[in-house]
Image (tube, rainbow, N blue to C red):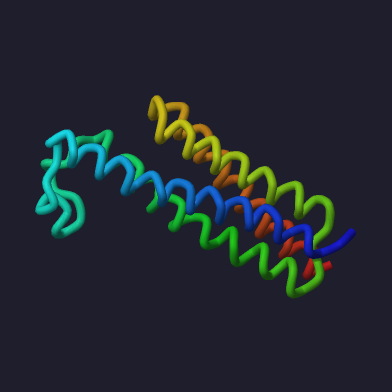
Length: 139
């Protein structure tokens, strides 16, 4: 197996992150043109005047910069140590799929229970990636 395959899920997650980032100004400007928010509502981040549907894409963007940092690190570790195999790549794609699912739920209908499920599964997959790498290195 080609160890470079571990980089593809990373690229897709980066793409998702940029897609959500592009949604942030779109939603904010749309709300501003409709008179729902003003520039001062964002002076120190997002004030209490910002409606939830306007702040949601930004919150999802922040989510994509928090936990996934551990994903990027483990993928790079798999690549650098040349320990990426089919199982590692499968786990990486699984993590990306669950993170995409989390973003979809969060930005669309935002059912907290559904969001929690996909988030929790993505956490388990990420932990499994780290345990799997440690087991491969220890073997």
